[in-house]
Length: 575
Image (cartoon, rainbow, N blue to C red):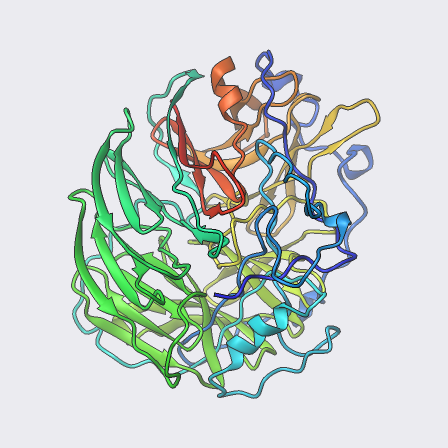
């Protein structure tokens, strides 16, 4: 597998997060928070002048289109200390020069992964002609040269065929994914302590990095996708309950969701096989070899998988396929065409992003029982791309342009634009763990509200400027802005009992904690405090890790393990 390119010069990386040094801090009563109530723009230090939209409002409009098909995503950027052979990254990106030791990763900074451009435009790369089986591969190759960074996904339309005539119940997925981060309220400890962690396996230098995307839960276990295996751990003690081998020499992916304790991973020499795993029993339910297209050796490294109800979708460079998760029945199958699927998102609904000629991008809600055809389709305005899916019910996506990977957050209802929030320039921190459609973690959506985290900054006195902004999904208007005390950063984590649960990481002289924000006013209330030892453990050195909240447990899950780093973990748990 070729290594991903370094960031191009002239584009500094996004600001990092906290520092992980423990200290003392008390709760912040909601009535002491000056940002808790709506503030007129003229009095709000965060309320900047209206940002010019990335596209005119009147350009929006949904229109029906044919059913979706295949598409994919370029490789992630190189890990700390690793650079593609023959390339030397510029010092302004923070890459270690020869002989230097990689710096310690900050406690809670999630590096924003960026992706090269698609199609014609300012980058100067022409769009490949429709129908070419090399379209997506050309994009990935272009990423090595491109200097414009864009998160995105493309997608193409092709006719899907297959079964889907056997109706099956569709219970909601019980893992993370693009569902707005909702959790069912349970009892929890007001003080969170470090419980256990699991060291990551070493990565060979020749491999550079290994993707270990995937963490799922049952009533007893937390299950982690690891290098060449999937492992179930007792959630309370960390004891190994079971292990399912998934040998691979590639960099394989996994679904972010699960349904009825079933999830799916890819494995094999070229990630060419799919395995559905029973998370409760710890066994493989079925395996299937992905259909090879026109190439003699198909490349499945840049795949995406998604689960919604009893539907599993797999999308790769040369095609896509849908399965009945429980039975392995093929629901649809697509190849390259004038339009093709370029990414999937699961959870409460199955969403496909479709790319037509790298010029037109569509968002579709898929009907698995009708050969994978679209229930509805919305076409993004000309000049924009779909960068990520942050919720599938309601459908909320991040849009970008040729030069900006994140320009707007759009809510789409029944194939029409309901609202749009302009992101401005570096105003909001949108944290990702990769370039797949479901890679965003800190953009949180409830049934009627969008929550965005402000980019953390320090003023001249060293005080932290951070906050969370709430917007109405119905019209995109700001509801309120909430800010913690001057020593804490803050980022959205999940919806808990109807309120936003947010994470305030540890810093130099304060301990980490969780807070809830009132959906009506933004008033902050302490939910749980990390004790001193736990705050020290929050300083996780692994790149590309992210926090997960489940049933009273705070978990730091790792997506990528690097050959250049030591003391990496798969999981760190607190409760």
